[in-house]
Length: 213
Ligand SMILES: [Zn+2]
Image (tube, rainbow, N blue to C red; front, side):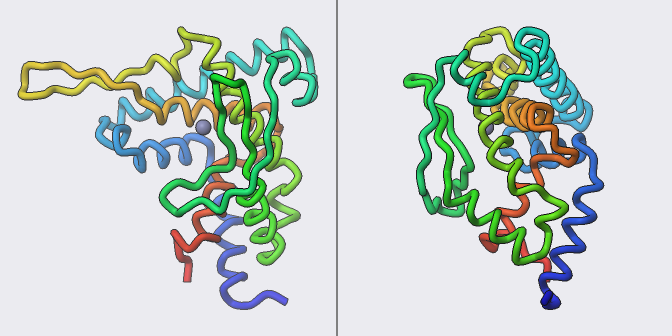
């Protein structure tokens, strides 16, 4: 039986599912310390180019290997998966991580369970797939592994220029481009119809970082 708050949450997520990818990627840039300082035109360029980088890598993989499963792909890339249970603090919540030195993808079972319980409690399990979430997380991290092997890729080379004392130009890597690329790649590889960012919103609501009431 749904209570008032779960009906409100249900309705909010049904409307979130209608927003397109670009909406959520712009939202990510606007919430990023470095990205938020860019002009709207530059933000839109970062979104467009990061999506393109993900699409190119997706097309490369499909052309080269066809529709291989995730397990087959990680064997090709010589990557292992480690499952852990980390409660995380609200300043740094993660579904997965990639360790390039040891070629290990870490999957956080605890955060996965929080999303799973949230979807069931709010009767959203038939519209937002629980099953696909594991794939989304693993493909997201696989993109970071692929980036590591592609030194020229846009999502790793996009630099932010800023001025110090009006005459020294600083160049800093724009990490949010990498996150948008990984998110878009995970959407293409898992075949979900909505933005994977929805899973992040779920965690933020479930952990009390956003309140709908
Ligand atoms: Zn990432």
